[in-house]
Length: 628
Ligand code: AGP
Image 1 (cartoon, rainbow, N blue to C red):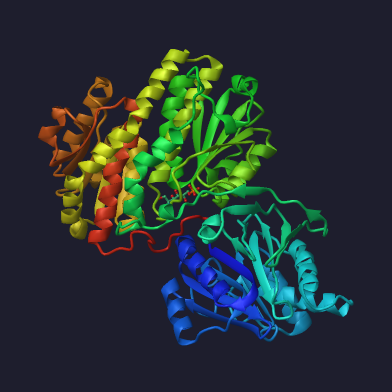
Image 2 (image 1 turned 180 degrees about the vertical axis):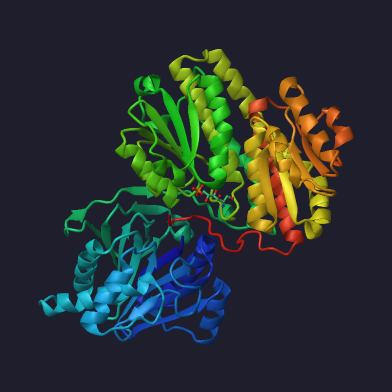
């Protein structure tokens, strides 16, 4: 889960370096253990790299500026092999400074390859990384190609890359520059993201289009095991046999205002407040003139959907909790079994899958390796795969049978917020579409559900406008709280899990979500005087749920808990058992997660801020986990 950026221009100038550094800043959320940049021009190849955040590299460049360059490649790292250090950071420059390489992914046979290189060429590694091994291998192969009669330069570098790819086991996005060919960047990918941006007199490469979205929205997809030669005026794509390929071109919408903080202190705060728009835009243009749901991009026929006998949602982290919320709706509306499985557990469980199974892969980035591998397993077993992703052109969307896009806009903060509520919304659209196609619900019922769903953005705005109490309580509790329990029942249970994850990942507080009914089966032993317990209370209009959760609050309160409750406007039954009540507008039970998630997001954000944590780039994490 590293950030990779490249830029190649016609003339040597500061431009390529500036584009790469700006792109790295946009991708820093993908990994921020260390950063580096390499440049090349007719005057030669040079590089700078530094452990720590991108600011450390920027400071180094101010002190030791690079020369004007035609090509530049840059990298922000989330360490997999080797600790975060100057030496282990990318680019890796080898062969006497002739070649520079950056890499995202994991080379699983790196040790074997390094032993071979050490033995055959008496070359010893200077770093602990798998990437350096590839750099040496590429440089040695480049010399072999030149020795075979190919003129040193871009064609030799491309042929060297083509020969190296099959020798690598594992995943990679590779970008290489060489001092013999300052007019080109050679890249390759397998199971790790790479997008090409098409400019005017210069071209771009990135882990995702966000890296260069300020300069172009015209992109090319690079397929699995493809190699690409990028110059300022051309992009040539090849397969590993050297056959030219025609890449798919697409346009991204990363309007700049959607990728800056827009006056908010953190991206997370901004994205929490963008949720009404994210849900509204995910709901937009989903019905035809007669009011029937039409999910155009679904590309799975109604007949196939009618024959389904099971739905399995696969995802990780917050996306998995979105799936857990959706499961209640899909089973209730469609009367079809719906499982939710953590993607990294899915294929090892040896799940029962066939043509009648719809596997739904939920992912904001569309690049989560655990989910990619689960998608591949599902397709190998013959299941149909639908991707619900927020990133057009991402690997998961490309490798699925069909795609349902969320329209949350770019989510920069590592902690997912607007993507979560957009994912839940998209899952609801899928559930209602299945119910419509399979005849479980009449069109007037579907329209009624859609009408109530269309009211959610305004209700979300109400929650956001009345969140001052949440901020106040979080500021007060933040510095002195070391443990929080979250409780929920029915659709509130996944929200309890999500609320706990938010607090863990940005405030570094031990927090745990439980099904409220599970507490008495053990976890209640955790409750002591002053233990903070946050409970999501169902609407009183579901008395069989409401009554039980009130009892659960009484159980913890009787043991000294500090009880924070998320409850509907008008639900006064909670007042006597709650120290604090965060109110949300009345809404149908199945839609309440779209509202109750918001106070918990704000709570986590404010607690993290009160504790001096880096809200947008929490320690040890990255936005897109592109390694298994
Ligand atoms: C959520 O706050 C986390 N950053 C993490 O759990 C994330 O949801 C998970 O890694 C899945 O990412 P994806 O949606 O991009 O696949």
